[in-house]
Image (cartoon, rainbow, N blue to C red):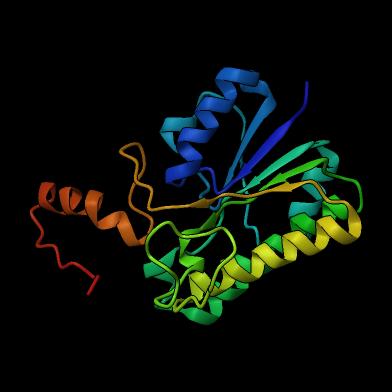
Length: 205
């Protein structure tokens, strides 16, 4: 049975994905990795490792020593949060991707799943029936990093045969994990804030 690692497992995609993969492949074969020391309760039914995607050597060592076959790289700063610290957002979103791509290039990983986003599109992109290949002029650091990441994934596939899969996700929300700073997170965060008795100020224009 192949062993899978989800990096960024505590986020809105990761929480749901870990549970789905464990149900399909077995709890012991799906390792959840996230920045927090304590495993989120929602995914505590299987193995968990504290992991900082920017700690390149620790990530490499874990994947090689544990003989991980497939990596789902979900760790990223999302749209709204990334705009508060563009330099760190670029470092996190790109350096982490290179760590995983290089491991696959070396043969340590057989398959990578890396989510892209409709953030790669910009105000000049056709808004109706948007083509796969079209004008992409993203206006956020998150969108810029995802567009660059798409090109690097394609480069590693064409030049090194790396098996990397990606989908441009639209806005995603989940009730099983806290909002993570994505553009659509207001749809969930507004309820969290109301429950705590706080006012909510929408960050979108």
